[in-house]
Image 1 (tube, one colour):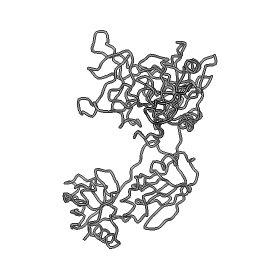
Image 2 (image 1 turned 90 degrees about the vertical axis):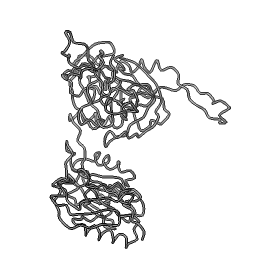
Image 3 (image 1 turned 180 degrees about the vertical axis):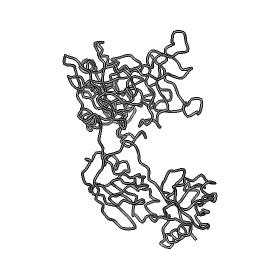
Image 4 (image 1 turned 120 degrees about the vertical axis):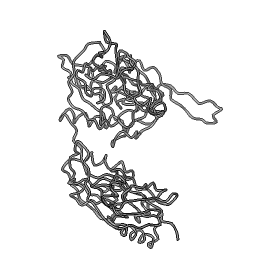
Amino acid sequence: MKTIQTKRLRRTAIAAALTVALIGGQLPALSVASTSTLPARTHTASWQQQPGSFAELIKQVKPAVVNIATTGGSSMPNGMQQFEFSMPDLPEGSPFGKFFEHFFDNMPEAPGGGQHPEVTGAGSGFIISADGYIVTNHHVIDDARKIEVVMDDSSRFEAKVKGIDSKTDLALLKIETDKALPFVAFGDSDTADVGDWVVAVGNQFGLGGSATAGIISARGRDIQSGPFDDFLQIDAPINRGNSGGPLFDTRGNVIGINTAIYSPSGGNVGIGFAIPANMAKDIVAELKNNGAVTRGWLGVVIQPVTKEIAESLGLQKAQGVLVANVVNDSPASQAGFKVGDVILNMDGAPLDDFKELPKRVAATGVGSRSAFDIYRDGRKQQLSVVIGSMPGEDKQVAKVDTDSKADTVKLGLQLTALTAEMRERFNVAKNSSGVLVAGVERGSPASKAGIRPGSVINMVGQQPVETPAEVIEHVRDAAEKKKSAVLLRVEYRGQNRFVAVKLATA
């Protein structure tokens, strides 16, 4: 067995608070048998279904659930607890990198001391075809030098990676054997409701074939791990080693892939997350056919449209998504998108949540044409875009430089030209352009909006600015139009965002 270590334990008390950990598994579903009434003291006449035995279900699916043992080449830090099993380090660029504070490790004592053996890891997976295709989490096998699959009957096979998708933390493996293997099928996760029973089978703590049960606690969970978050939340007990294991419904169909837990200690506290089957099966099919996933790409950086931003732009309500950046030479750039545009819908379908846009674009075929209704300069218009292929790495947008005079605005901002001296004093990048915020009055509307000294204002409303005078002119224009707030696009430490600053009444 292995222990979970917290990398940041000595640096911050946050690591001792609630954290999310990759667990190599999620909680599957359980079946329903009998019913019973709630006690009379609850003053309700509600009925609750109770689970019966899950023995037959587990017997049916367990032969298709496998343990995954990996061998890597990295050594572990000194002073860590040493156990038989461990998870590989969370890779750089993992979609869970910012969210999870824990990593799993194994450090058996090396004979003679001083030299550490190769790191071993343990996770779970499940067979999806008789010819040996196996699904697991990407983080289970990432950077592994050797991957060994241990079957329910203890037979062992060396596995090869057929494809990975780090953005959704999925991987497809293949083993070679002459005999037909037991396998399980993906179910329809869209039909799984909150309160449905689920069963998880996996290799928790290195104990292969462990089964647990619980219910679906919630759907559509966004745990800030990436642009495609849409997790099932479950309360079935899952722990280290469950990662990549299947979550079953009561019919024995895989409706999720156990991926993460939310925990103060790395152990189960009844909050687990599984990748929905309907997301996973499309990705797995593409990995099987192509070895990689191709997603549609627009090339914009977006943020939500708040009530204040909507008012400052003249929108009747907060709707759509705001374009905070347009990537150079992207499909969006070529179609004429501009910073400050509000995307109202895609192909006629409204965007009620700003995270819907990347999901819809990603699901759109590369090379296909989509229509986007946008709001710009007080009126609606439509742009037609040929969807591109998502690049492997995020691209950056380059800027130009600036120059001008100083002044003060009633928003509580002291503005000045972005000279070479000011760039050096406030540590502003050479390729940033706009008007420098040299000071912010305490308690002012700008201060309350989060603007700091050293910020660079490069747009007011949807108009680019290069001088303090232009900022003042656009702010006054907004006030004359009786707007309650003015929209500023502000760059701070290389990051651009829109903020709505309230206009003080005279």
